Length: 444
Image 1 (cartoon, helix red, strand yellow):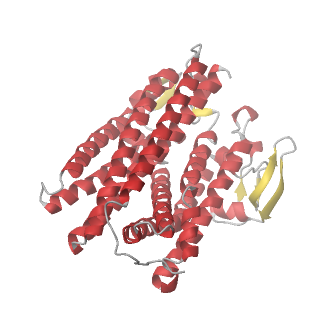
Image 2 (tube, one colour):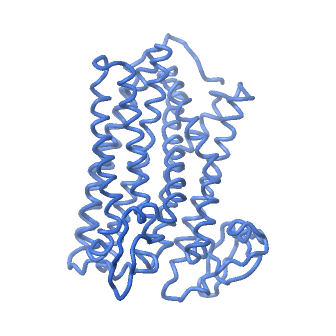
């Protein structure tokens, strides 16, 4: 493994690990706030216990996310100094604001965790809402910085020099809205399905059924609603990418030749040598319609991009297909859940529906990882699209491969610790709320 691959692999590993905790940190506080609100309105102890259990989970993920996020900030300077030399003054503002949002989140979380029976009950609830809002703002600011790398604005680049820097314009770059919208909804869908799946499993095992039923309903509503909305944000993102990064769209869709009435490819194995996709289902004119809203419009292929500037096709295409496939599965489950809530009352808490949520527990985060892969790999070979190539930004530092192995071990250790702590937390839930003997909430 050479230094360039090691640096990219380390960054990919760090981002892939951190993004899970970022999504949970953005979303779980809202679940917590809803449960807390129900407790304040109904005075049912079960909602207090759900809120407390979730708040402990939020604290676990907040601490782990803080560690992995700190590592990422060091890696930006260590692995990509040339990138930070030029990009830092331009998109440093969103990172500074993200740090402010992080500190507000930490303070609010501290108030919430230790404020039970100490603060006014509604002020206490507000501190939980602030945790969610600041976490969401923090995530949006980081995504805005990444969006700038895809659509760099807020500066003038001439003769290798950056001038006329406008940090505010850099934050609100052309891609910030579509990327932030898509990522935020993805976070709600992934976290909602993961949390609902865990509680559904406990319901199926008859473990503390009332507690887990209340928690399941809150998480399932968030996850199902987000999964249904996600294709809409995906369509907005795809149309934007078609206009601003045609090479990325071509790689995602394995679209090799510029043509009108371009077919939408579902599945398939890209053959870059022969410039074709084997074993794929093709929908005539589908790609043209999705990209431009016109079945007869022209869609640029990889043949319109210089060979040395083409993104890796296979990785981009497979990751995109995985993201879309898992997103459609989750949308289908979400639609079935709302049918159960609105019309088919007998489906709610039925074994087959709960089992669907259990099987779907990891799907959202797999889709998030796949989508992030599309975003990053599809931009290659550029680290700042059209301005700086990734190979020109890396540190020419010998022995960086050992850093990759070291950080891989650190992240693996953190993952095992988090899994152990969550398992312990779930096992302890049964002590929080005892149900009457023989109570059943699951339809056979």
